[in-house]
Length: 607
Ligand SMILES: *[C@@H]1O[C@H](CO)[C@@H](O)[C@H](O)[C@H]1NC(C)=O
Ligand SMILES: *[C@@H]1O[C@H](CO)[C@@H](O)[C@H](O)[C@H]1NC(C)=O
Ligand SMILES: *[C@@H]1O[C@H](CO)[C@@H](O)[C@H](O)[C@H]1NC(C)=O
Ligand SMILES: *[C@@H]1O[C@H](CO)[C@@H](O)[C@H](O)[C@H]1NC(C)=O
Ligand SMILES: *[C@@H]1O[C@H](CO)[C@@H](O)[C@H](O)[C@H]1NC(C)=O
Ligand SMILES: *[C@@H]1O[C@H](CO)[C@@H](O)[C@H](O)[C@H]1NC(C)=O
Ligand SMILES: *[C@@H]1O[C@H](CO)[C@@H](O)[C@H](O)[C@H]1NC(C)=O
Ligand SMILES: *[C@@H]1O[C@H](CO)[C@@H](O)[C@H](O)[C@H]1NC(C)=O
Image (cartoon, rainbow, N blue to C red; front, side, top):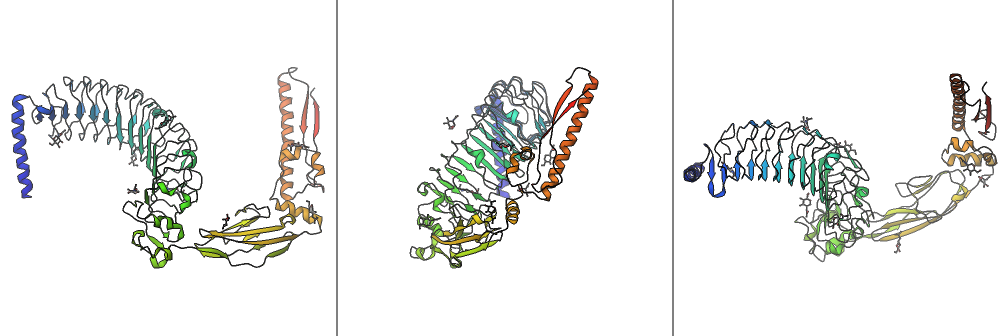
């Protein structure tokens, strides 16, 4: 306390001395401090409620911050044509009259932050032809009107953080041809002001933070061909980017962080071939798929911190030959394989900490490079196996590594039966269980060596077995189960034989059922006679639809009749007296050949 008091007193005496010294050389307004050597008048924190008179005419800097200024009148600063820097922040300004700054043709920096401005009238900034920096953050501005900034032809940077902006008019930014940097933070905009931004052809850096947007639509950033750095962050409602949302941009740096993106936006990014920096941190992204990022061939840094990432597929970074930094700390990753990278030789910085890592052969490549890789002070730690839980990669001795960082190749343990016979129409599971470390993944190949998927009639179940539902004769063949993990693979073939049933009626209805309710569309039904040659299965559902459609088309024909009669009665002799109408009745009776159809032509004569 005491020391501070002494200090402040010293400072006060010193400033008083300085003021009186400056006073004799340079006039200075009451309550201000003027420094002639730097041509500055400092009136900061002087409880001023109006702009003081008598500021020296050749001042280059005027600090009026932390006062009680409420309003600025017209030509408030006339006579200060040399002023280059004007600080009006931390006042209580609510109104600024039109042409308030007229005459400040050399002003380069204007700070108006932390005031109470609600509206900026068109013309307020007129005369500020040299202005480079405008800071109007932390006000209560609700909207930007057309042509508000039209006189600021040399403005380079504009700060618009923390306002209540709900609307930016389409021509608000007209005239800002030199603007290079725009920061819009915490606004209540519910959409990207695409039209307004498209006026800013020279923009290089755009930061949009804390907007209440839910998606980025296509062409959201039109005509911003010079933009290099885009940051859209802290948008908790932003869940998706449209495929062409970043179309037209040629970015080198992109940040889309603290949003609600649940998938890696492959498509919107793929044209950004000059991208070097990509930050998708703090989004609930769960995986990076293989072979989808190859277009980003100049990418050097990828940050995906604090997501839900549990898998980085093999080949995920294929094509990214210059990737030198990967920051995936605080995710759910169990491993990160060397095969995910184009070449790990170029990787310099790796943040893999705070992930539940399984220390086995898949992470051996990190272990081998632990002295060369830069872990940014946070080396990865093992979560499994239990005996090394919590140990950092740096702590392992050379002799321990071969015993810990190992894998066990898979072995299929359920090797019976090797041949399965089943009658047509039955459902049969083909088992395949394997062990190994890490737990092997199971893959099934069909008789034609195609990979079988977890969906469809023949599907791979989550436990690895294959389920053939409603077996058909042509399902007969050899199915191969492949269990594989990082250490290798094991295979097991099962041959399936499906015996057909003699009854043809059953065969047909079964085949229909199996084809998955292929309902007959109107188009094919209309195709008349060609249908007769094919066996035409149907059931109650088909019948209902056919009857309904027949009924509708009948109603349609009746309606057309009425319309024609009406037209005819309205304009006698003006229209044709005959009309041909295609009419398609359905045989709702349900003859054995199904919904047999025939096309009839009705010719009507209108008298
Ligand atoms: C003006 O003086 C205040 C202290 O009174 C100081 O904090 C501020 O930095 C000064 N302004 C300039 C531009 O130096
Ligand atoms: C803008 O949003 C903030 C909080 O999100 C809210 O307090 C404020 O009332 C909003 N302003 C307007 C004008 O909607
Ligand atoms: C984020 O998205 C998920 C669904 O993807 C939704 O359940 C959640 O409510 C969203 N969060 C916010 C803050 O909108
Ligand atoms: C895209 O940006 C890069 C680097 O910023 C530049 O070299 C390249 O010419 C630009 N391409 C186009 C089409 O503007
Ligand atoms: C990785 O991301 C974290 C969190 O954003 C950050 O603190 C850290 O500096 C980043 N590390 C590198 C090397 O970029
Ligand atoms: C199984 O391993 C062999 C070599 O051991 C390899 O050639 C083959 O591609 C692997 N198959 C699968 C599906 O991984
Ligand atoms: C079942 O129908 C198919 C054609 O749909 C036929 O090739 C096959 O021979 C039939 N099977 C029996 C057992 O009738
Ligand atoms: C009708 O059948 C013919 C062959 O008979 C075929 O070329 C045509 O595509 C079919 N049209 C429709 C709508 O199914």
